[in-house]
Amino acid sequence: MTVLHRPERSGEEAQVRAVVEDAFSTDPIVGTLVDRLRDSSDWLDGLSLVAEEDGQIVGHVLFTRGLLDAPQRLVEVLVLSPVSVARRRHGNGIGSALIRYALGELTSRSEPLVFLEGSPTFYGRFGFMPGGQHGFRRPSLRIPEAAFQVYKLSAFEAWMSGTLVYSRVFWDLDCVGLRESQAADPAG
Image 1 (tube, rainbow, N blue to C red):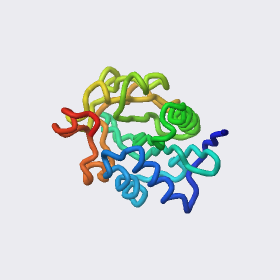
Image 2 (image 1 turned 135 degrees about the horizontal axis):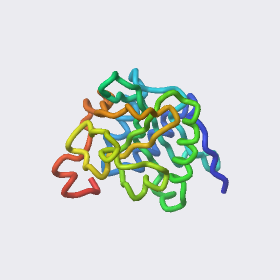
Image 3 (image 1 turned 135 degrees about the vertical axis):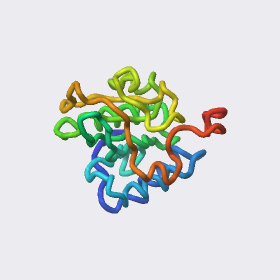
Image 4 (image 1 turned 45 degrees about the vertical axis):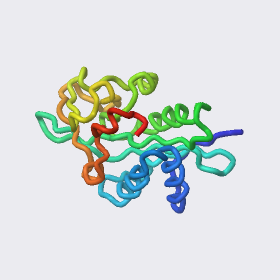
């Protein structure tokens, strides 16, 4: 079976949401997060990317606009969240291949950085680095320091450091970091 990586097309919103809800079955708010980001000013056309297998969407990644509150000025950056793979396709490299494709699609963009919350072991394979060790501050102390990751793009300049500011949508839905109950049970 061949997996095709491409931007999400108009009319595929329900398929994307189904994959997100399946991947985050223990955290159903993530499907709502994608819908609300889609309707926000932080949505970036062409940066909702999918993995398609036999005509079915089996993976999805989303980049939206964030801000870096740097000493010189605010800098528009990208936030990679969520990364979703249909549970029946876990362990087959779908997510890894989609992330590689997605990062490759960013080469001509003007944003200098991509941020995410995630496993340093998993995302480190793609070039993500611990944000705190590179001069960046988490938008919330609820984000474990090790999970706060950054990926530098070609537009990055050495003066760029500061605090990441998420889209308001993440805050409105309480999708930033881990609450105490989640930290005690990482499965959600």
